[in-house]
Image (tube, rainbow, N blue to C red; front, top):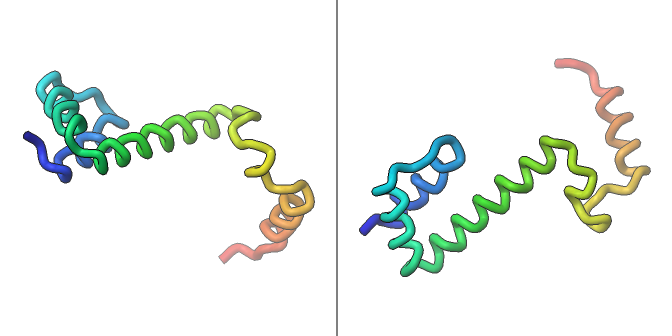
Length: 86
């Protein structure tokens, strides 16, 4: 059976390329027994979905509570414009 370290590596690898059949089954078997790795893989999947939504400009990407108020956005814009290049 795969170790937690192996599963973490494979979970990260799935973001870039598909796994082999053997890797997928080994990972599934490990995830059946390891709650912490299931949680880790779930977090990676959540982040992947969130980044895709942000990248594609999904307006509903963040709930209203997670969005910055317009005043805060404007302060950030001004601060970035006023910042001198290094």
